[in-house]
Structures are given as C-alpha cells and as structure tokens.
Amino acid sequence: MKVLLLEHPRGRSNRHFNDVAHTPLSSSLMSGYLFSSLREHGIETELCDFHATNRSLSRMVKTVNERECDVLGVHLVYSWENTQNILRALHEIGSRYKLPIIVYGFYPTFAYKTLLELYPSITYVIRGEPEYTFFKLCSVLKKGTDPGFVKGIAFRRDKALVVTERPRPIDDLDALPVPYRTEEQRALTQDGINVLGSRGCYGSCSFCYINNFYGVKGSWRGRTPANIYEEVTMIAVVPPEQYIYFVDANFFGPGTGGQERAVQIAEHLKTVKGFTFGLECRVNDVREASLKHLVDAGLRNVFLGVESASPSCLKRIKKNTTVQQTHRALVLLRGYGIEPHIGFIMFEPDSELHDIRLNFNFLMSQNLLEGLSKTVDLLYHPEIVLMGTDNYRLLESAGRIEFSSHSDYQGSYSFKDRRVKWLADTISPVCHYLLELMDTADSPLYWRNHRSGDTTADHLREDLTAWLAELFEKLLVRLETDDVPCTDQVKDRTVRDAIEAVNTIITKTMDDTPATQYGGLKR
Image 1 (cartoon, rainbow, N blue to C red):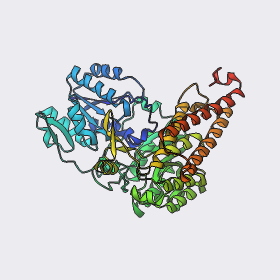
Image 2 (cartoon, rainbow, N blue to C red):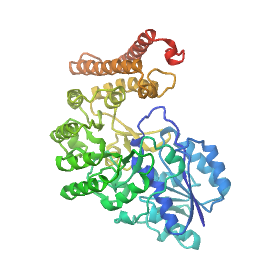
Image 3 (spheres, rainbow, N blue to C red):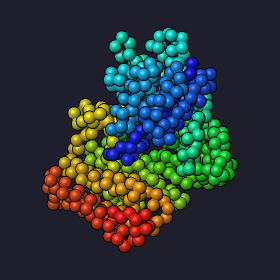
Image 4 (tube, rainbow, N blue to C red):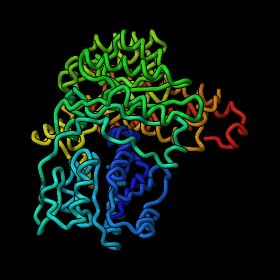
C-alpha cells in the first residue's frame, strides 16, 4: 500500500490576514508527524507540500495521478473564501482517480458532518490527532475489514453517517518519530524551523478550539526535555546560527512542574551553539526563575496571549488570567530585552465601550502601538468565531451567529453594544486597506521595504502608525460622548475620509522622495 499525503495550496484571502486564526501554528507539522509515523509502521508514504511551494490546485490534481497512490491523505485547512476551490479540487481527484480520500486537521475534526454530507469525494474524516488513527484505518482498508472499529473517524455507510468514539489523546509524545520536513519546507525556513514541544493547553479559553480538537479539556502533554533536545540537535545544523520557533499553543505546562520542565529544556538547549528560539505562552507563565534560564539558553522572541485589558472581558472569555499578571509579564520580558508580540482581541461579542477604552489605554500606556504592522492588527482585531470553540456553541444557541455563504465553520456575530459594532465596522476597513498596501509589491508600505532598511518607508510607517492611533482615539471619544450617530451613512463617510487621509499621507511623503527609490512608482 502506498499513501500520498498532501498539503494543499490555501490561497490568499481578501478579507483575512491572520493565518493562525484558522489553523494553529502547530498544524504546520501535522503532515510531517503523520508521514514519519506511517513510515515507521512500514507504510510507503510520500508527502507533497503545495502550500510551501505555492503551487496551484490544478498542479495538485495532476500530481495525484503521477504518483499512483492507493490512499490519499489531505491535511484539510479552512482557507476562508478559498475553501470551496480546495473542496472542488478534491472532488475532481475523487471522481477522476477513484481513490479513498482521508482528510485530517482542525477544520475536518469539527466540520465532519458538513463535509461528508456535501462532498462525496471525501471518504473518511479523522477527528483529532491523525498519527495512530490513520495507520489503523490504512490497515483496515488493506484487509477490507469494517472501518467502524477504528476510533476517531467519521464516514458514510449506506448514506448514513457513522461517527466512532474519539480515542484518548496520545500520552507519550516521545514515542512519536521526529516529523519529516520536505526540502521545500527547509528551503523556506530562513525565519526559523518549527518545533513542537507539547500538545494541548491547560487553559479553557472560550475562543480557542485547541483542547476540543484533542477531545479532552486541559489536555496539555509535553515531550521530555531530552527528547526535544534530540530533535533540535538533529535539525539545528545549518546555518551555524540557527533559529527555532516552538509552535506549542502553550510552551509551559501547568503549575510548578511546567516551570521546572521549562528550566530543564533551557539547560539542554544551552549546549547548542549559535542557537536562538522563540515560544508562545500565557501571561501567568512568565516567571523570573524560568525566564532567566530560557534567555540564557537563547530565548529571543515571545508571543504572549494577553487577549484583553478588561477584567470583564477576561472573565467572559474564560482566560483565567488578570491584568496585573499581564503587566508583570511585560515588565519581566522587557527586563530581559524581549519585546513580546501579543495576542489581543480588541472586539469580542459582548464588549462594551468601557472594555474598548480599557484595551486602548492599555495598548497606549504599554507602548504596544509602535510599528504599523502591530498597530493595524491590534486596533481592529475582533474575536474570530470558528466551529469547535465554546463561544461558537454559545452564540449559536443564543441565535447570535450568522454563517458565511461558503461554510458554517466560520460565523459572524451580532455585537451586544451598537456603539462597539459601529467602531468595529468603521476601523476594520481602514486597517484592511493598510494591510493590503503592506502586502502589495509596488506600495511604499510593502513589508520588504521595511525589512530592507528603507528610511523613507520607515518614516511613512511611523506617520501612519501615529495617525491610526489618533483616529481610533477620536472615534472612541466621539462615541463615549454620544457625539456621533451610529449610522451606516456616517460610518461609510468616516471610512472614505480615513482612506483618503491615508492616501494623502502617502502621496505627500512620496512627493518628497526621488521616484527612482521605488522603481519610478508613486502612489
């Protein structure tokens, strides 16, 4: 039996710029882990990554024919409005080549009913961790026995939906082989190589589906420090100064044991020369004792799950952290020379204007609105409601959720406070306009211009950063004083005026800049 695994192209969304929202960073290694596990069980396996190589869906369809596999496994990632194109490509594959298609990942784990009802080309859906379940399913397919005995799958039988019991999460992560990384993935790792040191989280945030994916609340499981060190030394060979990013949803495990494990990991990593790394964690896990060891071992970047500066919001989203803990975490990290990137939800369904004021004042007072990329993201970012989160179920049961035209996996919601809705609907298109400019090659805001040390681009970004924060403050004050009618007409006019102001700032800066600096292009 030969298995072909696919990472499909995902396409660029015109409305969403946050990839982590629809599939966590840890899923970047899902197919690699599955590949290595199947190979370890003696199954001939090949992995083609069309996401890393940015190749087309049509090329992906042709590749399936060229590889002549017996089973096709697809890491199915929800890709916003591009999802339908991906599913149509899988339908073409299923119709043309008559292969059993097994999909796995966060999206199919929760949307299995819709996928199996609407897309007959999908034969099986794996719910949760795929490594052991995929192997058992392959064994059943090879023998021709009943797949209903395989835990963790959903499939059709005589037009009826069969859903089997979920297996327990994999307890011993050390037993899994090192994930395979394709040549294309290695070629694209100039910003670092991803490593997964743990799975799950001990938290219970209502906006997150990490633990529901594994099927157990508080399902944090960590690899041993020695096992992590073994993988790091295996992959951190070239270039000499290697950067690794731990894509764990929460690098630290719970309690004192989690802190001690982090110190042990640091002690192992200190022996790797020319090595730096980044990680993600909750604010309550940033503590002096472990942080010092991690920095000594090469820690340089931290993504900090702050989410809100409003105690009411933190309680609603079940974050189980405090604003005081956030302040302490920022002070500690900055004391060691680390300026964290923060996860933040400016707007959540039940936000009131007071919550928005607390959020904005916090970002300003903590100097977190420095840099256009950060500011654009932090000032507009709403809670994204996806199937599998506790908040999705709550909003759906309350009749407050509407589904997109292409999927019931993603839902939009009605805000409790009409003023919050107006502010979110007003600031969002302005921030999206700036994000589009930062992603457009002939724009002076293009991200590569910033990385290249272009001083004019840097000054332009600074001006727009200050302008955007000022705009947000003015709109917030007007809403707080009831000085703005919350109508669509006023909103549309405000957005038009703001975009015109952006263009004016850009034009003025570019008029003072030699045209040759941007290849003769001026906006």
